[in-house]
Image (cartoon, rainbow, N blue to C red; front, side, top):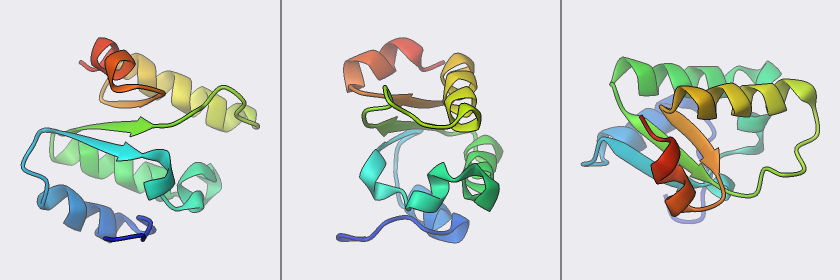
Length: 98
């Protein structure tokens, strides 16, 4: 997926199935902007794939200035659960993964 973003749940599933590890690490920029627009449903579909296939996902990026309470709450709850974490560094992610 050179220079492309993951814009559908099926594209994410293809990527996940080609990943030989239990935990995937993606840069925030690898996810289409629709992922962060919760009303599109893309984030929910992708998180469902993570759950169904018992995987974990780390999305690296800066989340300090997130606008929107819903997205902020989504990131907080995801990080708390530890299966999908939104964090700045791998070192921080390791502490949150469960």
